[in-house]
Picture 1 (cartoon, rainbow over the protein chains, first blue to last red):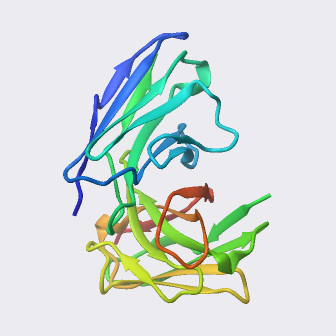
Picture 2 (picture 1 turned 180 degrees about the vertical axis):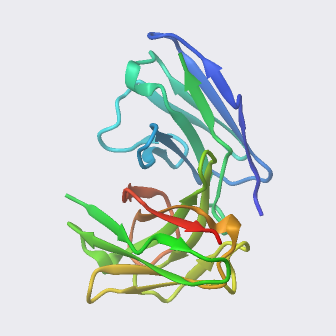
Length: 106
Length: 123
């Protein structure tokens, strides 16, 4: 199975901060990498697919880069609704696997 | 508007069975792969099973292989998860998710999610 490792597991930030979360795959996955946001008590929401394509309706402060094994999610200016847990996911090969999550806190 | 509504969760004893359902609306159900994803209390996301649009391809996580069966009835716009031989570690909220890829291909990205149904395995 492809292991997805996110860092950091959690971070503290303030409104307006630039935040970067990294995700590393245990083997090359091209750009079959997606990012999700989950607010407490809510279902996950797709933010970015194909490593860098913004899902419709997602604010442009979110961006994704990377290919192969190393990927990043960047929030350019943190907003109150962005305090949540973020997950990366690979769909290069089944079983589909998620990272362990990164909790963004105040 | 795409809507996914899960049902069928509840409390079951270890070794028991449950069948989850996910009713889809607002999209051409048979044209999209679907998946089940679970989340144990306080834990991260774990993909469980996926199925192609016409049901010809099925994918399972090792943790549920041989115990859970994913299926779909495209005439009813409904996805199912038959869960047998349930274990304590299967306790989780189970989400169904619609893939963003159109057609009968593999799993891509999970574009829409239901609100989930809670399954509790306990004696």
